[in-house]
Length: 293
Image (tube, rainbow, N blue to C red; front, top):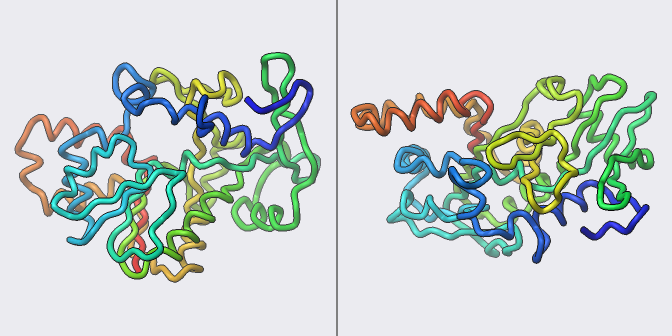
């Protein structure tokens, strides 16, 4: 990690290095190492063919670009549509006419961490002592970041921690500039309204070997780091960049509405088990956001 002994680093930079450093970043490992029973976590994209059929039913019959495609499991599911996989370091096309799909992409974008301390909003830094990393309270937030907190965290109690998703806002801007006309489908876990109050310690969490790890600073590069997606921010940014919000609901609502168009999924016991996994495993914590331009 690029943190000198006794020095501090903004958390978003720490998260960037831990996840995306070209040599040691967590996501630079093979997706086959990270996913599945022998990896650290499952994603809904691995529940094929059910998840693929559900997503295919939600998207128009047009070219599809997928952000954070991983093992590109959706490529076959979305065929015969033309398919373009985009990684976090890849440039977006100058112009895109068609659909864009992002599943568990925004939760892995680096975030600024902060804390409300004695009526002051301050940034949280990461300090290295020997081989360990610890939180350190940094300077007061800039006026722009204070405005962000006032809008999206209006009732923070003293001592509460929070995240500022500047990278997520920037990706919505980039998508808005890239997409000439089409549909954006975002599926991720996150919060809306005052649901942030469920996370007084912030929503940052790590995963390793299918176990949630509250300490996101340990073992950088060897465990996942995620933050719940602030959907009010995504919706505001989408509207600012020319999108109309078509649908915003829980993943469970999306799945149940799609089942009516795909009745054959209920006839197969294997697919019914996959459906149960999605509905009860992530149906309420994940949200579906559909945008149109």
